[in-house]
Structure formats: structure tokens, C-alpha cells
Amino acid sequence: MTRRPPPYEKSVAAVALVATTAEVLACPELDEDMLAPWERRRLTGIRVPARRDDVVAARLLLRLCASRATGLPPRDVAPAQRCPGCGRDGHGRPFLPDHPGLGASFSHADGLAAAAVGPGPVGIDVEPLTRRPGPLPVLRRLLPADAVDAARAEPDPGPALLRLWVRREALFKAGFEAGFEGGSKAGRDDVRLTEWTDRGRAAVVALAGADEVLAPLLSSGPAPPSGR
Image 1 (cartoon, rainbow, N blue to C red):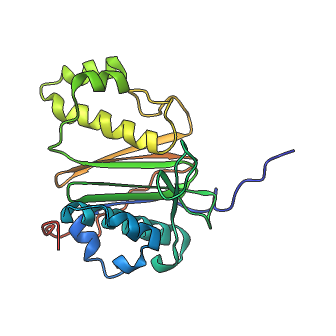
Image 2: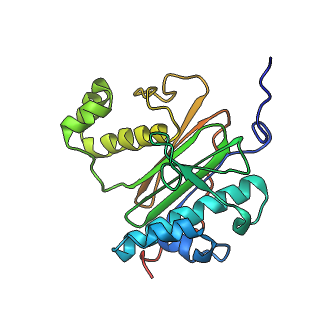
């Protein structure tokens, strides 16, 4: 029996957005009251205001990506989360219950937010370009040793190691835990990786079953400082 593909598997283009937290919070299409009650409950445990803003921005940006992929207003998008390890809802990988053929992912780090929605598995990770992953034993345990060695051999190994790390995180979030390689295909012909750096941030999008689409920032002017 041939499996029927889920809806939107071939008809929806992937959308990925990267922005500063301040840009997302200032976006007129988005508002914190869009978050579901379970999301707001999770926010109560975040004591650092800047980190709370980052989490809010990433969750709102996910709604904007889903809106642009499906045509629905951002307020009508209702993401959920489920942990593949324990099977419980409210944490773990995000998904769109009303659109089972679409993958979803979001990321946040130090005043940056990123999100992606597209057909098939999707993963995204964002980090400031100034961040340096480590320590080295951890990198060697989680990344291919030859890729780590090649990055460390560069004149400035920090950015190269960071690219490896965000690539690994994007693939992990897309569900390719066992497929990481130093190359661009993660050992699979249907996985596409898009790497993007600009204005002090680095992002990687991992997509399967769709061409990569990385949209511009929400605004093209100078980014205001994070926080409200």
C-alpha cells in the first residue's frame, strides 16, 4: 500500500527568518498575547528579562514563518511541542498540529531569534558570531573529529568551530541526530543546509524535502538593542 503524502508536502515553500529580538518584538504583525497559556506558564520560570524576551521573540517568529508558509494570520497559528524522549507535550521539538506535513523549528541566543517552517523535517539554529563553542572534548564527542581538526587548523578557528556547532544543532533539531557529517548533506541526498552570516549573527537551516528559502531580516535598518 502506497503511503499518501501529508498535506503541504510538495506545495508549500520553506520559510526561514532570522532577526534580532528587538526587531521581532517591534514587528506590528506580532504580539506576545498570541502565545498560548502553556507557553506563558513556561515564561514565568525565566527570571532574566533579556532571556525571556529572546524566548518570546523566537516563539513569535515561528508563528510568522508558519503564517507565510500557510497563508494563515500569525494569530491563527497554534504551534505545539512534544519531547521525542519522554513523549510529553509542552517541551521538545515544535510542530504544527493542524499542518502535519510541515516541519517547524526555532532558536534564540543573546538577543537573536530564528525560526523556520517547511515541508518535511526542519531545523534551525542561530548564534552570535562572537560565541565560541567548547570545550574541545565536548566538540570532539559531538562532532566529527576530522571536521574539528580542520576547523582548528584555520588561522582563526573560532568562527569555523561555531559554524560546525550551529550546523550540528540545526541537524539535531531536524531529527538527523545520527546523520551529521562535516559536509553539506548530512549523509543524505534529501537534506539541504543553508548557512547564513550577517550583522554579527550566524544561522544554519537544515531542510529535507524542500529547497532552502532564507528570507531577509524583518527590517533592513540598524538593529536596536535587545530588550524592552
